[in-house]
Length: 400
Image (cartoon, rainbow, N blue to C red; front, side):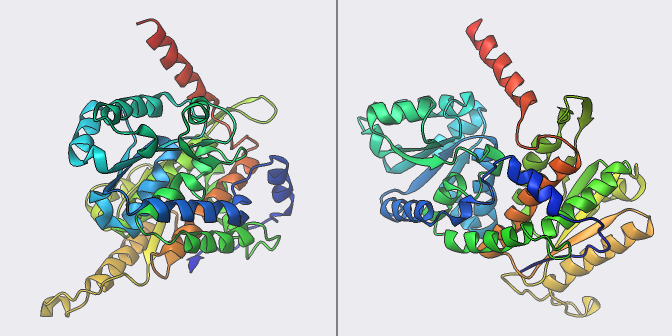
């Protein structure tokens, strides 16, 4: 269960929901595709015991959701599931040295099927597999577009296994598809519960009742402060398990709201900057800036009511309280201190970290980001700046 401490939001979601519907985006509809999720589960069950290691090759939205789910729900799976989300040669070699190629399944993830970084990773590991006289088709699976792109064409030609990324779901909105759910299922995460949580929040997202529509309330708060000059959101979870969630939100919000042109092609240069922080660690790093630096940040706290473990601190001076109590006392004290300094804060409270609450969180921020796009009068579902950078990179390689 997930709650927000938001009050007095004005306006109704109804008009904005109609505008979002016109954009024909599938991020909130795909979670009803039972056949696709059954396909993901069936394939994961078939393959999970055949390999010792799983390696995701992808970048951005093709990797961040998987990293988030692994770190939040299966942190001890670091010896089984690896995610290579960069083209840093040292990082790639270090990961290669940790795995047995003969007992590894590589999951190649690219919505377009043409992502340069992902294809370069694939070519590297494909050669490592074939050098050992192994059948590459048994060691690779592609998660990509259902009809086009290099990966899809290669799969058709050489009979690689594939899972589809729905056409109308962009990469940064794809966490609730095979992109992240298949790797999650391979390490024993219950993806049905993730979907259950996402469906609960999706129903709120579609509600015309302002008080029930948590994504609308969150976006409304973000936008109201944005208009007042608070253009940075600090994501401040008091839980190590949610630190990677902040990275996922950073891509989602920054890539969706950072736009040069509005819907009428007028130059607006909009954008909300997401800065991750971690409680209580960043009380001793960034907190001084939040308290006394420029007052241009909305601080979004995440509080966990019940941790997986309860640990007592055996010290009378600390009244033998638990670490569970201590971390939430620190959160409450930091929040009050910021409010005393007239710094805006809100709190997202989770009863616990679970598959279901992660599903709720994913849909909360996806829905809020869709609303933000409408509030800012921009297209939250494209990324022209990123596409230009990709084009320049390919041109530079051609010139070599």
